[in-house]
Image (tube, rainbow, N blue to C red; front, top):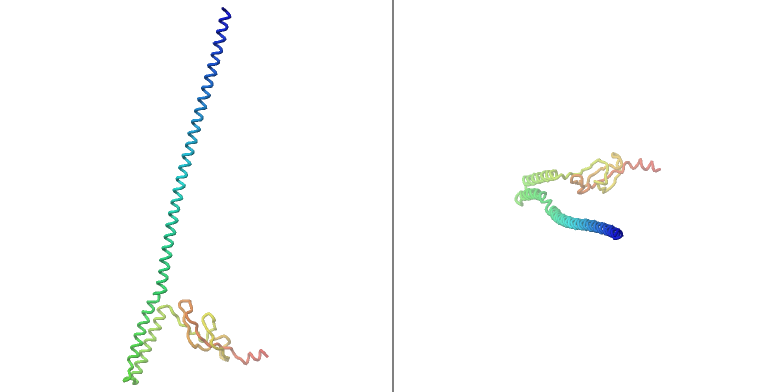
Length: 214
């Protein structure tokens, strides 16, 4: 009978160990399942964040493309407007100057008409001269108004930027390189040359040069 009691105790002990092992295995499985669930949630969240970032990136690219296209369109429109304005300036920019010159033409025509075949007397010629002087004065005023300056460089040093030498001549009165005659005056617009002055230039005293050469 003591042996049966001892056997029952051993069986109970074994059953208790098996129960504890079973409980431990179940706990491990539970922890493993919880860890797997957390990992799956983290992975799902990361994928969702990546998807959101990709969507945001695509939207940003689209916005940048739209801005680029708008900028290109604006630049093209600006280029066309500028080209049109330049063409208009080239075509009509001098219209105010021509309008002023028309007044000069009108006055010249009046001066010529004042002298007819029946009125070529001294009085008629005087009227013509007076009319021409008025026109000339008006033309000079017109040139000044448009910043067109006359170049008459008599007795000045020759400057190839504004003068064109038509001849050279010896001179005992003026040193070499000075302008001794203005054949045709030149003109500049502000600081830009319109037409060079045609001039004659002194070669200095030839006798002294010949002595130096000897």
